[in-house]
Image 1: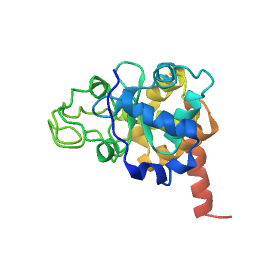
Image 2: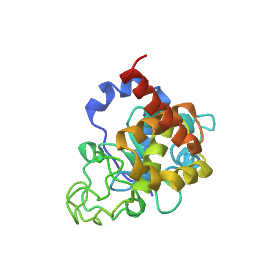
Image 3: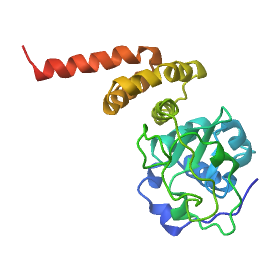
Length: 222
């Protein structure tokens, strides 16, 4: 469902916006019209293309969304529906929405919102309040394995691609053991490496071992 949104004059000379192509700028504005009242929409490039560019088949919407994710203008979250959600970052700073309707997508989001560490178990924020004080469900506890998978998906998407479902499953299968055995900072470093090199998550323990070996060698040079 489309909605009326506002564009602030400062949008046009924002440092991040002016670096974008005209198509990507227009795509970003289009996501506002089709996001819900909390700034969420489904990560469905084909549907977004139909909504925002119905008469322009040659617009690269997947590439545009990847650029918006890379620049931190959009965020991506896995959901309980088995599909990813997009969120317009800093939504409440740019859009005033009176009498918000409940966000179905927000209820499905399995991971923590911006500002929380990937392995925090309890959700942050004021119970019973939405991003601007409106009615919203309290944040549900997030299991460390879910948080790690969400962190991995976000790292992949900032690099312009989405990991296949099998890779998410691989990471989830080893997440519990890793979270209990290794420091969070070390796991995050390894996740960033496999995301950057597009390696299967099954190699994560080996990447962690390589990092540990490298740190040990640097600490004790021959």
